[in-house]
Length: 479
Image (cartoon, rainbow, N blue to C red; front, side, top):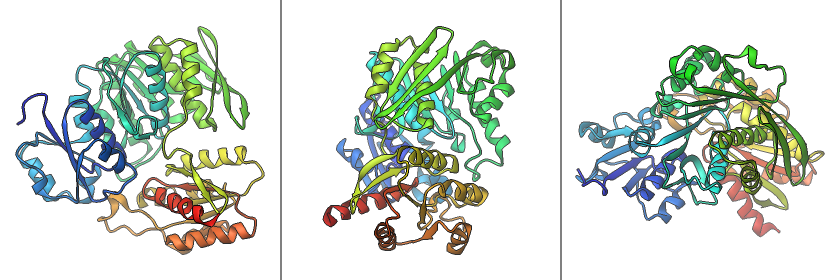
């Protein structure tokens, strides 16, 4: 084992969104960092390389030299190949853990943890909150699940005792964190490969909150049925009963006497323009007005949550106002990436029906009267099968939808079969199908020539960003 202060952590799956953020944060915290991944050309890899982190292509036991103290892995690797020789050697040496365990056990040790959970909106809310706390001089360490362009990574090392993180429910990863402030932004059925049903999901959120002995404040989205269900189920837990509970909602039907020992904060959107969104929060201290340069009701909800966290930690309204107004968004969250034959192209990480619906609904409001073409890379067959009708209904908010080849991800060795082309086509007359990039490009050209495509939104959680990137790169030679 290495001497304390020069400990060596090796990340398997280092080029994935969450693992990359923690690898960057560990490097900035003074750890020696190395890693490996089957795909070393991911969206996140270039940022890792800027920190001179050594990245091996593929997985091999030879990566685990004698000086490796910890092996932190993406949980997906246990599904893809649990008998991977590199995993087996790490397990044999007693140094194997998930990167979430590494963060909770080592990076968050002796920290005041703020953990943002939820099926949707975790990353944006985390980075919004980070800006508020940083601008207020609170200097937190931060972990988020994407590259925040302002930092060039998803991790930030701070000198204070605060540690702000995204808390992911997949694989019950968030049980590794013991927050002082816990957030449930929303809770829905997702990840059927590890949750039996909705009740199993809600039980996991209950364990996340009730299992923290450090809990002082619980913040929940009252517009989410799942978040409210969690509150009711755990209201008698000792840790939760003793904590301050704040629920935020745009629905004025929620009242404090209907909820156990809870402060209710109301909010409303006051103005939507081409340059941004304004909203107001109403709490026991009065009315608070804010403005941001983002669009969509879901981002208003995220901003309200971030503002409440700021208030809990003593940040004043003028500081929150400045931070939200300066916030420019997160990579792969309705990211403007360029043009294809003069058509604006946006890239978004949405992969759950609720997220897709939110993004495309926002598009129809913001680009009213313009033809929207969605390009969707399906991801996780088990989720697609469970929610197929919801996917179709959400996607066909767009005028035209191009379905691409399904990305199997951690299901690649499970023998699952993607939804067939004819099933997608028969689901809606708005749906087209194209597995190869050239066909996607040709379909978009045809739609453009027919004046049926004014906006392109590329949607997906895996390699879809490569499609949007290729469209824009090709578009540079077309104009």
